Amino acid sequence: MASIILGEKREEVKDGEPIKKACKELGVPFGCKEGICGTCKIIIEEGEENLAPLTEAEEEMEDCDLSHRLACQAKIISGTVIIKIEDEEEDDDEEEDLKEKHNLDEDYLVDEEFEEK
Ligand code: FES
Image (tube, rainbow, N blue to C red):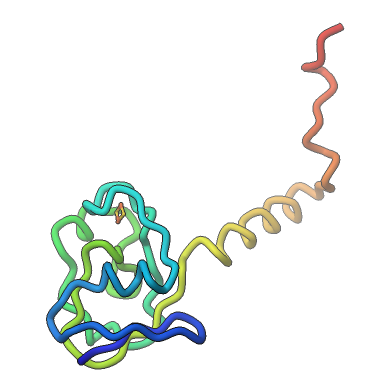
């Protein structure tokens, strides 16, 4: 039996099985479930060697590599894999970086030029 861990939660997966169901139970968001949309992209924090090689869909997906997998496609070989949901941190960081870069505050986004006169 293999396991997927996300934060404090753990789900068991049979050796050699897809990790999709376990990831769903752990709260990973899914879209197409066919390796097309990228919604289910997860970061492998530990145990990437315990997952089967990238699928064709993963190889075609931008930014997918051994530590960035599609939860709807990847299979576990055995052992434990610790994952993180991709969007959680990176979106916040991106927003912060953008604000910092342009020295913006929250009110900047209201552009008065576009208001009707
Ligand atoms: S749910 Fe669309 S790529 Fe996995």
